[in-house]
Length: 276
Image (cartoon, rainbow, N blue to C red; front, side, top):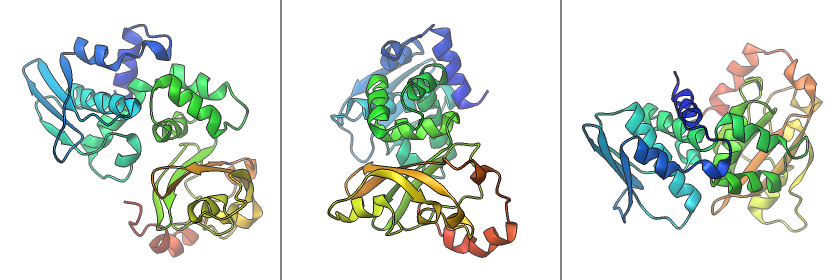
């Protein structure tokens, strides 16, 4: 089983049927991992295990959702990578999207599935309008007690909606996640286009809009992007950053042919490593 499948199997084993029952500390304790909250130097969480018992120490952050994700992350390490000790520097799914560390990504996946299992999370997201608003996603995030970034990334991973989510600053893209069924041919710009609402939000322009239809070429570097439209939503993220949700409303974007030569020509620009 994948890390996510193992986490969701554990949720099913406990018979959890609502977000309020997702007591991550109780689940951890049942699995032999005690959770403590203490100030840490140079990391967000540590995990030390001996035999069938472990202690996860979480640095208090004042953000309950981020602390819960840290607990889920360390429980992922405990259940997936037993026999190793860890000092983890991040406490949110969006941070490790910019990481190439396999074990950290596995622990993130475990935590995301544990805190937002598909059977509960997908119906909650889809209970709003056809195109979920950030307001609705924030309500779901609060119900599951996770960060907004973790919720939008999980929404993409669940793969029931045609979405791409990303975080940008004035310096460019920081991370991105796309629903698996969204064609990989669609390549986001590395820098915000000045026609996007997100650009205005990052640069503090007056009269800025945060949602509406956009020509796809405001977001994608593909030669044929100008033929299509997407629905863009954006909101302030972490300091100096903007959280972006792109909903692919144009079904023709899923049928457009992949042009390998086009990808080859632009790959050096699109994948410069700046988002890593």
